[in-house]
Amino acid sequence: MATLTFLGIESSCDDSAAAVVRHVEGAGPEIMSSVVEGQTALHAAFGGVVPEIAARAHAERLDGCVDRALADAGLTLDAIDGIAVTSGPGLIGGVLSGVMLAKGIATGAGKPLVGVNHLAGHALTPRLTDGLAFPYLMLLVSGGHCQFLVAEGVDRFRRLGGTIDDAPGEAFDKTAKLLGLPQPGGPAVEAEARQGDPNRYHFPRPLLDRPGCDLSFSGLKTALLRARDALVSEKGGLTVQDRRDLCAGFQRAVTDVLAEKTRRAFVEYLASGPDSPGFAVAGGVAANSAIRAALETVCAGHGVRFLAPPLRLCTDNAAMIAWAGIERFRAGLGGAADLVARPRWPLDTGAVPMIGSGKKGAKA
Image (cartoon, rainbow, N blue to C red; front, side, top):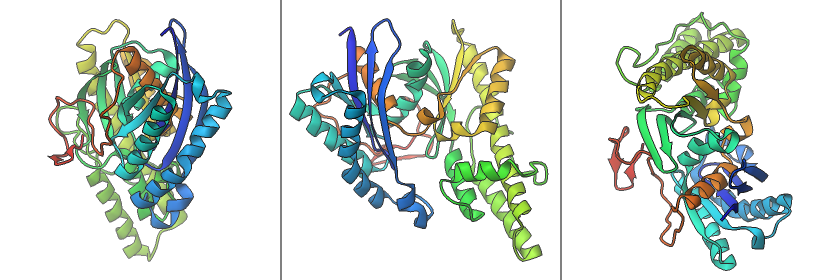
C-alpha cells in the first residue's frame, strides 16, 4: 500500500501509550497523535516500578489511551490499516495487557496485527524522525537495556556490545535511591549533578581496562555507596553539596564510559565502510544532556552524523511502535496469528546471551 496508517500500543514497563502514525511511500512519516500516561505517582512510595501495580494500571488505562490517540488524530478504526503492539521484552503483566488489547481490536476491526520488539521500536526511531539510512550505529541506553547495535535492516541488528549487569538507567535510579532523591532517578541525579563538582570524587570507569564494547555499571554503584557511607560515618550525614558532588562524580563516570565505548564501537562499525555513516542514541538515558554532549563530541571527532530523537521519543512511547509496525509490514514481516507476550526478546538472536539465559530465553 502506498499509504499506511497504523495504531501503535506500548505497555512494556510503566508508561501506557497509544499513537497513530501515517506513512506515504516516498515521503516522511507523520506522527498524527501520541498519548502517554505515566505511572510515577503510583510507584513513588516503593522506590521503583512494582510489576503488579503497573500491569493493573495498564489494564485500566490502555483502552482510554487508544480512544484519545484516535480522537487526537481525527480518525476512527475504519481509517486504520493495521495495529502494532509491543509484544516484548518487558514486564510480562504489562506486555500481556497491551497484546490482549491489540488482539481484541485487530480481531474486532478486521485489521492486520504486527508484534514489535520494544527495543526495535527504539532502534528504528531515527528512521521515523530523520529517515536515517541503513546501516547505522545505535546506542540503546535506558533503564533496562544498554547495547551498541549496528542496524542493518528492519529486522537485522548486530550487537557489538552491551551491559553485563546493571543498565545505566538502573544505575541512575539506584544512585538516586541511595542518596534520598525522588524517582525516576535519572532526571533527579542530573539536576543535582549540574550544581556539583565532578572532580571531588573519582569513581571507577568499569571495563575500560578490557578491549571491546561491553559495559558494567554495578561496581560504579557500589563505589558510590561506599563513598556515601564514608561521608555519613565521618560527618553523621550528607550535606546538600556532598550529595551534589556525589551525583556529579557518578554522572561523569557513566559519561566517560559511554563515550569511550562509543569510540570503540565506531572502529568496528566504520570498518564495514557504510556509505553515509550515522550514529543514533535512544532510550530514556539519552535525555541526559551531559551524556548527549559527550556522544556528540565523539561523533564530531569521527566525522559521523549524530542523531538523537526529541526527548518525548527517547522515553517509552507508542509512536515508535506504530512506526516499527509500518516498517515490518512493508517488509513483509507482518501477520501475527501466533503473537505472544515475551518477557525476554534479544534483538540480535544470533549473539551469545550477555546476562544468561533460562526457560524464558536470553535476557539480552
